[in-house]
Image 1 (cartoon, helix red, strand yellow):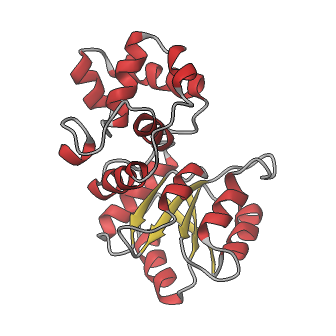
Image 2 (tube, rainbow, N blue to C red):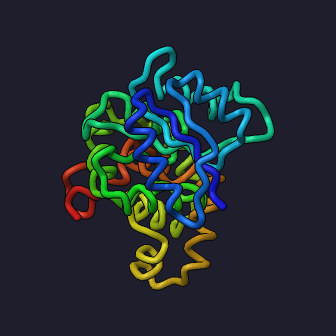
Amino acid sequence: MIRALIVDDQSMIRMGIRAILQAQPDIEVVGEAENGQAGVDSSRRLRPDVVLMDVRMPVLDGLAATRALLGPERPAGHTPRVLMLTTFDLDDYIYEALQAGASGFLLKDSEPADLVQAVRVVAGGEALLAPRITRRLIENFVEARPRRNAGAVALNALTDREREVLRLLAQGLSNTEIAASLFISEPTTKTHVSRILQKLGLRDRVQAVVFGYENGLVTPGRPGSPEAR
């Protein structure tokens, strides 16, 4: 059973999300919170698997709350997955939220089925990369920042095959798609992905996508990039 916590300052939004999730046999909504600070406190008390976090809230916004839950100062013993919720398709906080450790984000006007699938994907330990909006937002925020070379040394630690896998991963491909592209098995692909994340010190696939853009493995708007796919 997936334990979910809903953090949003609008009661109607919380009620709607709760109704959608509670109708699923594998998801239990363990609590709600009306601002980021209450969300942090509730998460530490209720220990959910997934926190659905609004971006803009009073007292403590979603970005600061995500840092409190996932950052170096977080209490030991429990680290939930955070799925950011936003009304805007170009929210100023999205890039920072991904860097803070969020596992993905979803627009509030997404279809109910997409919301349910997002919770399941994030709870399963994956990052929410499939929706086109996610890939476009990552491109926009990375494109707006100067290219970094900080990852050059780390990239040198990867094998040639791992670099190939990382390049495809940064394009938003799933393990199945990467395996088909490189003519390798899915278990082998999964092993490569795990080693890449470990070697680069990355939390999940979302951070791998950002890393890939920042270090030139994928160029926004070029063929092969998520926007071009």
